[in-house]
Image (cartoon, rainbow, N blue to C red):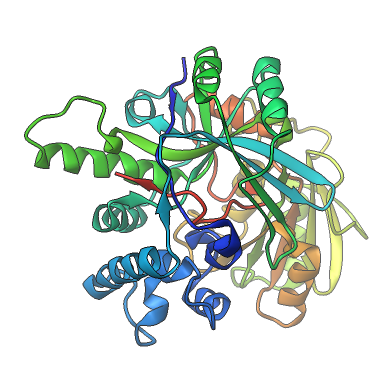
Length: 408
């Protein structure tokens, strides 16, 4: 049973929501955030990436960064202004990107259910990133960006969503990247709370560090409190929950800076020992079990040899895992993609042209284009209690920060 809970959102007024909303803090670096927020004092990037308002070169984990986050948050509350809802609410959040449309339920979910694995995970988190968002939550006393969850779609919830969307929207704007964002306030949140009681599990699609940080922040706040009823806001965390049949996962491709002291010819010879190679290949694989490799301004197609089959297991059978186990590790010497500085990742809408550019400009030696991991892959790995390889999924479109804030 999944528990969702209405909350009193702190939010911008409709006429300023476009100025306030920002891309998630973790999809841009400091310089990209500074560029996006330039000339817009209401951009939520001043809160989620406050180092953009400090001298260049400031350590993003410095004490001054968190003080600046709080200063900027308090200033935004006053100047925008951000206003709290008059009563706890649940919301709908629709995103439209081209022909793709998805609508999720915005509510708070239970930290207890996260800890107990009713909210299932598929990714390991890094301690330094957890430390950062935990401190950010505690300093602001708020969760400012939602965790992206999914569930196996249910017709009864779909019906409630469609009925609610017939009313006037609270927010409706097109961001600078062309994605349309629309938010409705649900008039009868109890119906949605009851509907989700029939959902056995929720799954984290994106936002593992935010969820883990919410759990750590709750533990710290509990220690500081003289009594805990279980009803405190810090026992819940901000989420947007989408049905699995509406999600879109794009490829998460790889580029490697060098060939591990091999010439192009030596590298191709070694790859042929692990894969069947078609020459020429296409820039993007058209089905699972196919990979595309860009080397020396030429695309090659890779498949498993006829005498090889996909390894068993929810994780080992993933295309991203097979590439790691048969090529990146044994041939290119990349043991851990999370820590090896020789590998980078190109996700989302940047596509295969970006892979070609990086190799052609000699910023990388070789690039790999993968078929996207499926939502069913994610659910299967999560249900098995396993962990997907790093950088396996890239969800588009992205949720915006700063639309609906949960104060803890």
